[in-house]
Image 1 (cartoon, rainbow, N blue to C red):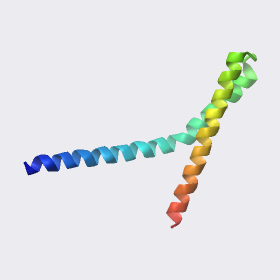
Image 2 (image 1 turned 90 degrees about the vertical axis):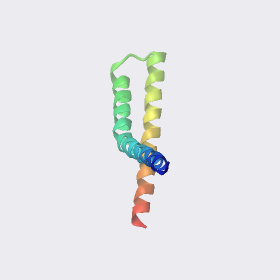
Image 3 (image 1 turned 90 degrees about the horizontal axis):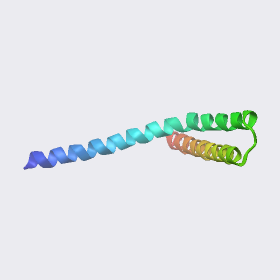
Image 4 (image 1 turned 180 degrees about the horizontal axis):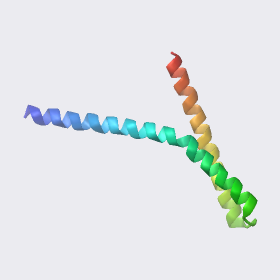
Length: 85
């Protein structure tokens, strides 16, 4: 009976560790994804004709890139301030 409880606790701890690992991976991917979205948006502006659909897609990618990059900057600033303390 006690072994079952311990194995359930281990499973819960592993799930928590996996979610932390996934969160760290997500944090590491935010800057490259934001830069790629910005690059695609700029290339769309320079190469594709100006139609409402392309303009919407370009603006959406630009906005998404902006949000992701600002999120990364805030994350880095809070991480650096935590590491200093």
